[in-house]
Image (cartoon, rainbow, N blue to C red):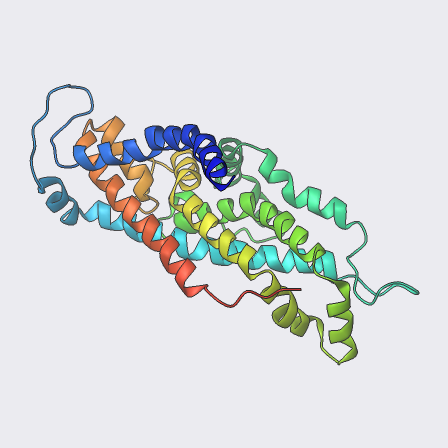
Length: 308
């Protein structure tokens, strides 16, 4: 019986694992191989150049700028997004007033409606979100500066995406806005599974809402938060940051490379400059950064599992 079970498991997993190896693992291996060549991406002919591409990358000032920006994305975006999402989810699910004859802890009225509103940006394509905010950030006709003028702050008219000191933060704000709703719904589902008796007992012991959050809600949701942190970090290092920066910024990646991230730099070198081998070298560096980020988060976030 046991022998037959393992045959079934192997047969069931063979096809998906084979497809994963073909379409995910093999391209990674190819990228590492091409990083040691002078391949242009168009010609079938190329030659091995050893570590020349890696030496060039280490001397590339724009690469170091893109690495710095990507690390800011990986560190700050998960921190801000998850913290904001936890706060909103806690307020929705536990922040309501106690109703007569009702439970001691309850959600706010219309919590379902708030979840829909927060989740709405997830329904929109990230390309549409980036395009809308690109118009909103326009210093002359954009909605943000128009509001500032409307409330009498005519002297405060930032260039937003045209200011090297503001552009990166403006792009980060868009990513936070577009992703926070997903985590609000995710954390709300986790909070709904926590027994209300735990909150009621804590409130009877004199604990406030802040204490119940840090001593009950957060510890019981820690596995979800940790997974969300890794997911958000990988998202910030990959497609999400590429789409927003590529659509919203001048260059793209400007001004003065102030918003260039690693994944955008890979795209530019491969498809704009015809330097596919060098692009794969930067891609290998991005892979190392992503794996290191996930490993560090999982290691630092490891803690004893709490059951309820």
